Every structure is written in structure tokens, then in C-alpha cells.
Length: 258
View 1 (cartoon, rainbow, N blue to C red):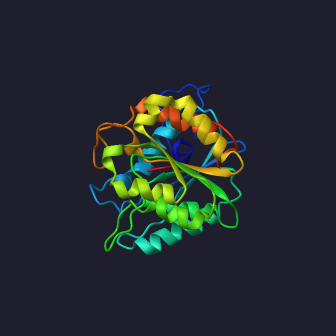
View 2 (cartoon, one colour; view 1 turned 90 degrees about the vertical axis):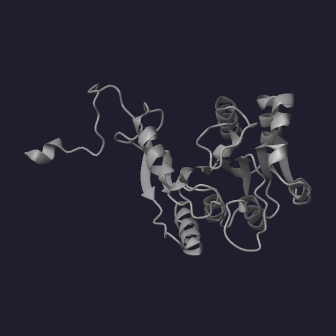
View 3 (cartoon, rainbow, N blue to C red; view 1 turned 45 degrees about the horizontal axis):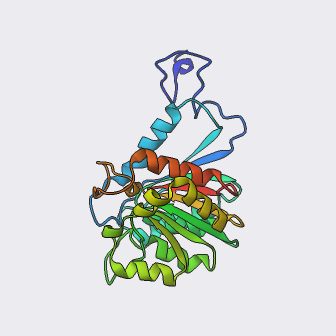
């Protein structure tokens, strides 16, 4: 019968003991959610294709945990407000998950995913990012508003940014970050203090709350950045920092990437 030879994921290597991440989850501990939206980028689009690419790579990796793929948020091209509302409502409905892995998409999605997660509770925010994302624009859309929106919603919950590039941010944002009680570590701080010291400080500050860990890929030097920059952390440094922050203190209810 032809139906007996249908598969959702083709495996060319027929090793029955080599189980991959998305193969037959038992009791999933992590949920994967894609948000294919890049309608708020001021530079090159393309991040909308990332969730599918990340899902493909993730499912091809050897299994280290049980993952349930929840699919993608149904975004509305050209309608940011409706898309952001759908992101918030979707994430709010997934509060039963202890760990939620969200793949964007541009970084604007993070503010609304955070709102969904933080509904009725205090949630800290840790982000690896080259920029403060504290902008207030007079018109148009930008993903550079994310941290400001999160601070407006987070109340007194701790917020920390790791990997800020000093030359890539206007001076007023350094002052605004201090005014809003947003702790930040620049690329110079990472070199001077080392990753372990920075992570210890961040963990201490966030130890009493669940945390949303976000990784904006412009924190590392990579040609696929939108737009590309230099002078940041190497990919391995960025990966180590994200891994160390995510493994310290309370388990983060969500990890996001954009």
C-alpha cells in the first residue's frame, strides 16, 4: 500500500538508533513556535524565511530533548498590528509550556511574545543584541522599539542587554537605558570581564524571576545579518553567552531568536 511509504521528513541515512530531534517525541519538554514575520525591518527583508530553515536544521540534529513542533503563527502580510496581536494571543495560550522556543522573524515579534508570556506575572528579559532597541519613531515601522515596549510592560522586572556595540547606537540610548534601569554590557565589557563574569552578574540580577531569553543575530559578526555589521562578538562567543545565560538560574519560560 502506497501510504505505508509516506514520511514527513525524509531520512537518507537509515540508522534506526540515530534518533533526531523531531522524531517521535515521548513527553515533550520544549515547544517550537515559528513567527515568519519581517514587516518591521528598516533594512533588508528575509528573516521571514528563518523559522522554516531553523526548523529544518533543528529536526536534523541528534535528539537531546523531546520537542513538539507547534507550527507557525499565521501572520498577515502588510498588517503589523494584527500580526503582533496574533503573536501575543498565541503565546499567551501556550503558557502551560515550561520552555518555549520561538524563532523569528524580525525582532519586533519579541515584544509581543513577551507580553503573552508575562500576562499576570513578573518575567525578566535578557537579550543578546548589538542595539538597545529603545527607539521612539515619528512614523513608520522598525524593530528597534522592542526593548522599550518590553520595559513599558515589564514594570520593575529586570532587563539586561548583552553585546551592545558602542559605535552602533546613538548616545541618547545609553542615557535612556540607565534612566529605565536597563543593565547593559558592551562588546568591550565582554572582552574585559569575560563571558563567565558577565553571566554570573546577569544571573544574580535575574535569579528571583523566570526569564525570557532573546537572541538577536546581529550580536555576532556574520554575513547574513540584516544589515551586516562588524565589531561584534564572534559566532562562538555569542553561542556560548546564550547557552550560559540560558542554563543559569530559573529555567527561562521562553527563548526567542530573530
